[in-house]
Length: 140
Image (tube, rainbow, N blue to C red; front, side, top):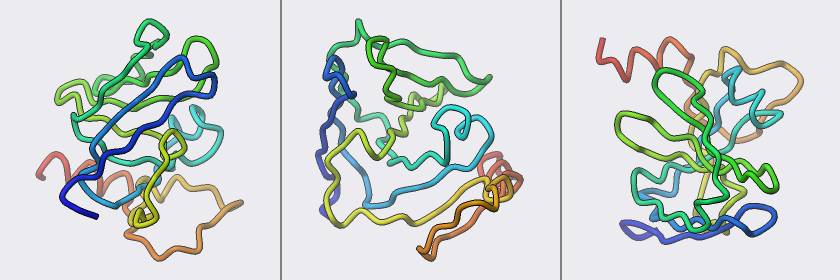
């Protein structure tokens, strides 16, 4: 992929469209308890940094899911639209929203210590526990 790659997609009903610039070809998986409840399984997402343009914002509902993040969904069809960090406004968008280029590859899994035993991915990835992730971001 070039330095950034433009992608676009929509919710299930088409009321909300999202355009973004992907800074890399990395796709991540989150196994935390909140993502599992939110998505019904692991969340497969791409990092969009802050380069997200949303059309149909009147159909976007936002849930304040923690002290540091919020989750957006379409109020018409319920499609999950984004996970957004409050402090930096950095977006992670579910991979299924976009028509992703073939270069996109699953590279890492976070909260691997919360992954249930009933599924497993074949990809070799960097596996990060919840504690390792918190330590990495807090600089400790």
